[in-house]
Image (cartoon, rainbow, N blue to C red; front, side, top):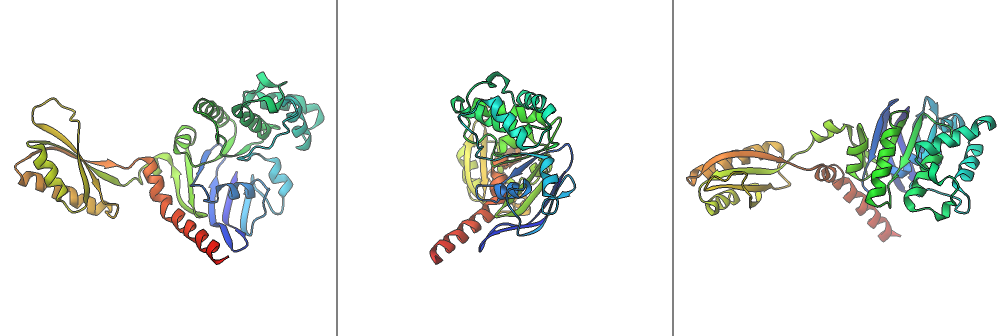
Amino acid sequence: MISVQHLVKRYGSKVAVDDLSFEVDKGEVVGFLGPNGAGKSTTLRVIAGFLGLTSGTVKVAGHDITKESFEARQKLGYMPEAVPHYPEMRVVEYLRFRAELKRVPGGERKRAVWDAMGKANVRDVANVVIGHLSKGYRQRVGLADALVGSPPLLVLDEPTAGLDPNQIRDVREVIRELGKEHTVLLSTHILSEVEASCSRVVVIAGGKLVAEGTMDEIARKRRSAGLHVVVRGDLDAAVAALRGVEGIVKALPEPATTADEGVHAVRCSWSKKLDEGAAARATEEAVGALVGRGLFVREASPVKSTLEELFGELTGARADDAAREDEEEEAAS
């Protein structure tokens, strides 16, 4: 449904999207993930036909957006991060107006609007003035707008931005239901949204692709963040032994999961410079150090980094580079 190949978008000397390539297949719900300023919104605006590209190709449902812009836009519904509304219009009036702009045939508009309101769960406010709605309902109206005409592809840019936890939960549920009938590309920087709604993710930072795959594939990229050790013997001696191992920067006692007398748990944190091989060697040295102190080791298991930590690992360096480039540009100007 979406094919992005070597996409570049520049604003003067600033490169917002840098040689980005990815695809979204029919029926997928794909999370488009990255920190603020990564180029997510710019990419989505190019896909939706709101921005021109500098170079590369983008196709929507087989239509090149530069050569067949109208045909491509007919196949997608776009919800921008800041959803534009006419606050003085009633919900149903606004959606009928949008259906007309989208060239939905006159005889089909009433049904198209009714269906879109049903999918976005806004039928109960059909005759309410948009300006009187809560932020959550206004977001849903923006979603209904994207759904008018039932396009096969939905492009949603930060659909839960600014919502409270209850509203976020409601919008996520709507997106999950939409994924049963539509292909969805969902932009966000909130990992819990991706875990709740998406089958696959594309991660960018500094305008570049840094990771792509299913949630399980991305999770497997998580490095060992530390070591969980359970020992029998003197706790202070165990902590001292572990702190003496090269590569361990912290060793803190944790509640033991057993009531056995003299059994203690310790959580160790690796230095960020440690790779998987070095972490394995440090684990061996930690066990040796404990045994050398006369302690009995019951368990020594790796502690995987969280998805949030993985996100930082994937995007942090590039985000820092982008920030430094921005600072250099500002200083030069």
